[in-house]
Amino acid sequence: MGRPIKNEVGNTYGRLTVTHFGGVQLKPSGQKYTTWSCLCSCGQSVTVVSSALRQGRTQSCGCLHKELTSVASKKHGASGTPTYQSYRGMLERCFIEDSPAYRNYGGRGITVCDRWLESFENFLEDMGEKSDDLSLDRVDNSLGYFADNCRWATRSVQNFNKRLVNNTSGKAGVVYNKEKDRWDAVIGVDNKRIYLGGYKQKDDAILARQQAELQYYGIVKG
Image (cartoon, rainbow, N blue to C red; front, side):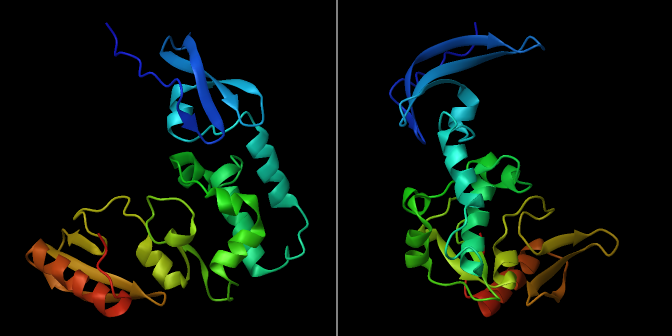
């Protein structure tokens, strides 16, 4: 027997509310997948694959994509400003599947709060104007775009805040040097790589990195 199907009826994902089970389908490979019938807030019905709902890849009947594509290409009174370009880039990363960055944002469930989706003016009111040396950054990279999780940050701060994808130590900036049999600690500050030393013990290298994080950024990265 396969795994029991989780009941999604009544759950809401973006603009979609699940109304009833859509059935089990077969891929050409023979693999099974489940679908759900949903009602979009615009009034249209649509059938969606379970994984697309839960991962945030499908959040409407298609109306949201059309609206955001329109916003991204729309001539706005502030369309030439750096602040509006950042706003538009945020929408493209999260909702436009053709965007090169979509895979790392919308594709992994990063969304934009309703208030900012409503208008650029709301975004501007919450964030203020962008200066030339700053860009839009999320404090917690596992969460989406909303006022309490966003800031204008320097490139150095953004690089520091990037999520750890793969690392031999499990700690950003600490890497095992096989040739010299030691743990090297480094940190990036203002586009410069600062070497913090080589250590026989991984914990000592991690401590050196943490102290540097406090010195240069005021926080210790998890």
